[in-house]
Image (tube, rainbow, N blue to C red; front, top):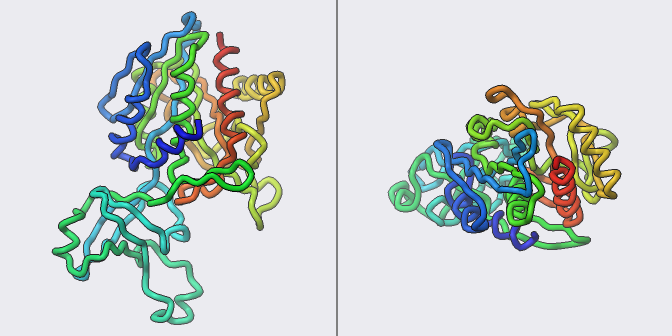
Length: 336
């Protein structure tokens, strides 16, 4: 699993440009599945199980990651940009990025020695930053970049500390890896899997994926914000690393199916699988799109707790990834 997550997280695939990660996922599908790609670029995979369930089951994870889009090139060859998905400007300054062309650059802004004291006391805005690719003129920069092209974080996958891993794009390449693990196993029932697009800009791909699949029950496999860091206390921590899979009852986009929520938490308890819920109503994911498409679907989210989401250094624990896989397998087994 860890090697698979490492491989998936390294691929560039911001919202709307998921073709590279989709092709890698396709290359890892077993021969006993059927798959298709829809008009929004969603990868839809059907896996036959031992029997057909009474209600159609869908599991989904999004392929896209947050990134940057180039909006302007200065006369000095510096690149102005905007965000693709939600990125805190605080995580950007000094970070390395890779352009769509493969050229590398660094995000910078006016040097501290050139700023007034009042400026130093304010968090810089994204509009004040630029990407420096080493070009000295606009014409030189235009050899490597055009307006509307993208950049993603240049961040290595690292294993560190007590079974922790860090990388870019763990949201939601870990979900993609978990789905691939399930697809490459023997399942007790038929399952439709969706590797969908453009979650980070409004959970857009999931609408089309759910419309095509028409599920009655859907499990959204995600990563979710863990706030167990210094300066954050109590319920504001939301969930904790090392405490297992996260099963949500509500977020900013979805009130989850209460029966599914309680059944999933009880299933984890009965199977001895570490699981927790979120103590903060925040964020959102593909569930909000799936549940209202067509005739609607009952939805639940099962996530891996993750520190520093939407940054170059998302952090997870291996045991939480394993617990999430165990809970997904138990959910499918129980569904049979």
